[in-house]
Length: 263
Ligand code: BT5
Image 1 (cartoon, rainbow, N blue to C red):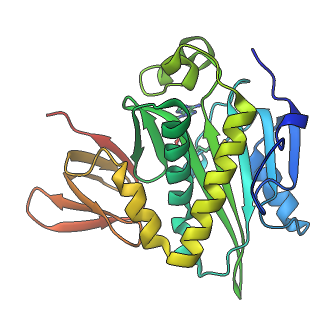
Image 2: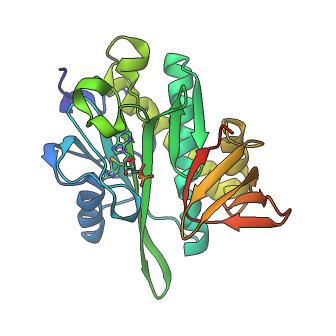
């Protein structure tokens, strides 16, 4: 198993803000939690917390994110001057940046899946978790966490129940990748995508993100407050999934887990 080289993380990095400060640890609970603490101590925008393993990696709704050594687990502090309703759409910045990076670096068959996944050959290779801190004035900071299954073997290093739904770069490519190179390239894509989000608005980022989406036009099931089944028509400019239910009505969904229906 290759280790992350802390001194190589910023080597040749061409960003203006992202990754200028990098906090590295071999093991933490969660890089999102760590980044929140750093942000509370006024860490500037673009500061990154990265760890080789997480003992309490988390997903949405308090779910567990399994984070063995060999993965890329990091969180970036953002301080956008936007409304909380807009800031929730930052998760699309992560999905788009990761999809573009995996396509460019490894030519993989990449897809984005609503709302926060990146898939390779229909299996989850990356999850993103955006967590916001607000005050009466609005958004104080956002922590954008990204987990990429990179240099480990899915069958060996992930629990049995994830073997069918998850994949890793190593499993897909049959080799290990240069983790520091992936990290730097991802930071560059993240910064560029975030800047476009701020300058051109979330709709343009969501528009790009949709070009990679494999579920649009397909029959899907969405597990959320209730279970919905229908045709995935669109992801609108608010980031909501637009479904056409079997009775013909349109439904906008903001939170849920999407899976394809094969029947
Ligand atoms: C996510 O949640 O996909 C967000 C994952 C974010 C992880 C990053 S790592 C750096 C930063 N620090 C953190 O603590 N978190 C972020 P969600 O959509 O809720 O998916 C969670 C579900 O994915 C779990 O319930 C499992 O079914 C599955 N899962 C867990 N670990 C996985 C892995 N390594 N690969 C693929 N699927 C996994």
